[in-house]
Length: 478
Image (cartoon, rainbow, N blue to C red; front, top):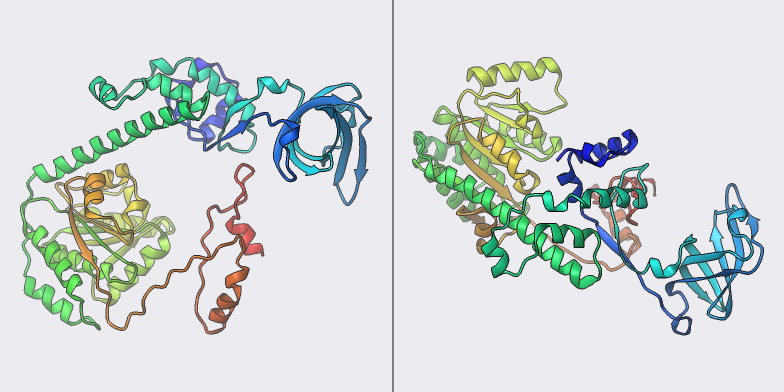
């Protein structure tokens, strides 16, 4: 359903498109990331530092205290619960809003002794604001109230959205109608209604996911392929020239993959193991086997850095690989695309750039996805469709129990690498309570002085006005 039915202004329409929302269905499936619950707590129950709200009558002129550049405090007194409560607002120096005798609703933190630091305020009755309120992740220029108003317009069309859950499943699992679930997830009356809505929408999402995965798997397993013919003694010779011996699990995983490649059944296999266990060499052995059979292979890495690392390692081990990433010049890309389409080049390492429409293989026979959870189902499917009955090998350092793996990925074969290469130091994981790096800073600095590296992973690149988390830019500036 086109967004035009909502009769939005060009500015609002542009902001929605910026959010990746192109239809009413997209808008209705843009769910809140959290909810604010507004409830009235009697004054007699207030404790120091509690976050509360109240309404009252402004009973003193507002005064502004300025300090520093563009910094100020606005103070005034409000009568509420038969008490005179001194309210302080930071950086809101517009006294004309807080006139004597005006009703106001204030949200913030009680500081004790009838002193209150406000974080927000409005002039609507508190009774109309109690309950659960959705909070959305929005781009700059779009405010929560504005987006909620747009969402209310879209909710008028909620019953026109297709309900994909079969009636028998809805009855069996006591699920809501799709339209009702949409209404309650955006406007829950209470936590109970929200649970019902989330339960329905999550079931729907998993049902759709399973249908896609089963269709993909059925297509892969039902289609026969020409077995890849190669001399396994050449694989053994290639393994023996490695500068290190393989572990028992690595050798078994390579045997599993070679058997799949020899088979007339399309390979759909996950190789999983901890970081440093040697999954990559299994992938490279598979690529070499595919190369010997005369087929092209594509190795997908989630980042350009990892793609370059894999490319350099392949070249060092004698595999004639080509690197295809977005950072290449147009001339370099075209050279690789020509070799890819003609079949002169057989081994490719790249990022999401390999998904692009202009990428055409001559005889794609093997696709390998490193850290496969970083690629979506559609992305993986689009890659496999660039060949005919392509063997697919996934790798993951995230341990997935076999039962869960079958549930998530369908009837998939799994190779586990549990043993670590000899002389490999064990991975030590520690959990440190706190919100700063101070408890571990001494160890980090000592490690850096010894020439070691430190990686700091943050939940966001830049600061957010919506979520209070430490971003990568803020940590870097510190």
